[in-house]
Image (tube, rainbow, N blue to C red):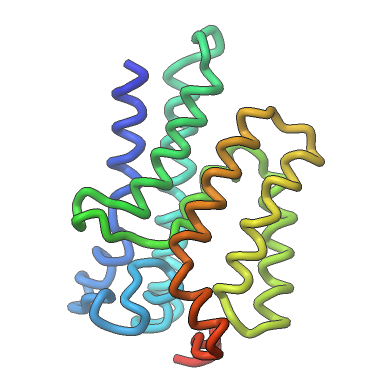
Length: 198
């Protein structure tokens, strides 16, 4: 049963909402802007409203699987927290490496936000403040995303969350930074697009 939950979480995470929303209006966001299916590129290519819609959908697909698995397992399940944490990780992996798109997915920030919103809303609130400050100071969404996610394990530790959650958080942060490797390269070369451009 636990394997089913993990697989289901991956498949939900793999739903490419950015691509689907783009196709509803006759566009393929993979062919424009950065080519990414995430909310930032959708917003840049199709407008802020559809970008926000994509963001909400990607956050929801991170939050709902872990919430649903927690509900279905109940309070008495053995290793309940570990199963739910693995489901959260699987959801993020689904977004980044979706089966439906030949494992070419998004950066995972919004989906990870949904996962951590379930486990530790306080850490997300702090990281959102970091994100807003970093984007305002730098002008780059990627800088905000990298900075905010990098600090999540610290906030989890300060808030006294479990060691298991910290391990999963570190894994997700490393994956997010890996997915941002092209952004990091462009930032170092001074070629990254600012959020006000487009």
